Amino acid sequence: MFRKKLTISVLTLIMIMGLVLTGCIGEESLVKESSPQKAEKVKIVFWDDNTGPQRTPIWEKLITTFEKENPAIDVEYVGLPKDSAKAMLDAAIASGETPDVASVYASWLPEFSNRDALLPLDSYFSKWSEKDKINKGAIEFNKRIVSNQKLYGIPYTQNLDILWVRSDWFKAANLNIPETWDEFFDSVEILTDKSNNRYGYTIRGGAGGSFQLQRMMYAYSGIETFFKDGKSTINDPKHVEFLKKYFAMYQTYTPISDITNDYKAMIAGFDSGSIAMLQHNIGSFAEHSEALDSNQFQAIPLPKSVEGHYVAEDGNTIGISIFKGTKHPVESWKFITFINSKKAQSFWNKSVGQLPTNSDVLNEDWIKASPHIQIAQKVYNDPDTILFEPPFYLSEYRTILNTIVDTGTQSVLSGKITVEEFLDKWAEAMEESQRQYDESFVNLR
Image (cartoon, rainbow, N blue to C red):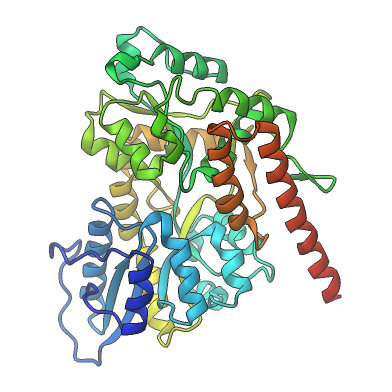
């Protein structure tokens, strides 16, 4: 069942934060309808972290299938806008009006668990017959980053930041697809043609840009650790070097509107034919494929670092979590196991264009026939690839990125501060958060 009504208190909360609800579409099922059973209906509420015309129908179809297989359970779908989903879940936790289940990024787990908002899933997971099919590294990562090492989310998809490029533009310019950072910066310049409203690149200067920026920095530098001898590596000279080149592209080889670019604006610029390259992740494949022909665009890895190896962010997954306030943990867990089943993971990840975490799906034909998935596997399977782990465990981690880094990016682009000042402030904030974290554990002894 798709959500049509909310309680007054939750409706007020969501109206304030600009929630856009999506309606019911289509009744096509992925499986044959089960025979009806006479049982009292249980309703669970599911919040999706990224509502929109591409992904909402995917969830609705999966929910329809789940309800037909489990006629005693209704699932109420609520779609949250991507850039405000975390803030809306924060507000729900603060008000005590959380959903039963939600799609939750791995990076959110430490904070949510510290706020005692999530239900530990260890006992459920250990008894699940298909537990060994789920990516063991992703499961262990989700446990490692929380303070009590418990399991609070089951990952159903894995992502990777890459470059999307207009391969037809490169071909027309007789230009090779970039494999190094020098080739990347050269290509941005060559493919810019302002007279025809064409730019070589687009920078995400608005909401959420900090996450992409951090991944680009470490992909360039090859640095493996966030802290070294108690100091953040954020303001390492290699990052200063990179950002001076990177931000220098603004307005010269990128649109002036980049200073407020959010996810949707960035994607729209690429898909409408005004941007040659953008850095995002494999998950925007569905949007690109709707706007462009397959011979017009392609995914390529972020270039290898100046140290000669790929660097990817560890724990770049999304999972389903159960909130502690649920009155229906058994039914909520049943929904989690369904979403992580072979057929559901295959359908969701194939539709979106991301990596499944269920090993049964990895050998399916669509995986082998998807070039962007092959690129992701190439990076993850490279024995020299470094998996960089941000300090998700810091309670202020996301706040620093949202308030200091996003706004700081705009300050650099507008010429108000230097790259050095920007990175120093960022590093100092992370170091202070780390000190507070260390002190909290000392006080517990």
